[in-house]
Image: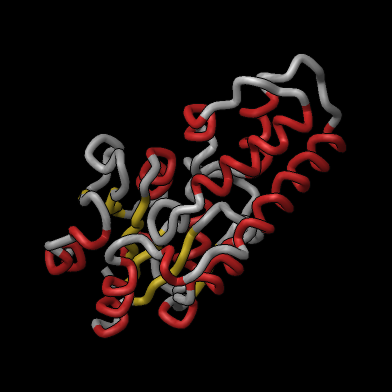
Length: 215
């Protein structure tokens, strides 16, 4: 492996609660009841508009495409407000050490995230200097499990897909890596069940980087 592509949320930092609270705020404004964290889990790793559809399943009215665009932007504005609270202390376990280790080994690194806020989040948590490239929702039109985001990241790294490892915490992301011809490292609460080539609870518990990178 000459490159490692990291998903952002749930891999490098957790903004799950911030997303959830932004959706709850929007749901309250629309009079939608019963939006739960289980619903929020279905929104992980997919586009903003697809996430909105999960919420609107619980609405008893139809929205025009223009209204949906406005609602998605409204939710995003609430989420971006909450991002101001992020600091380097919000990095998930093992992230800093892993990025430094990969840099020392000359392994190129990128973020591949559906979030259009990826660059701002990376700035807030202070790890931009340790990453070579960022591929975000601003670069793609298709959501995971389509491999587009990871293929764009590989292209930005000037590496063929088969030389890149994807680090993911969601089944859609693992499937996207597979479709893109990349091996994967599954992390997060579901790390044992989402089908990664390798798996660990979080980056602090990856004990076999030599084996992974030699593949």
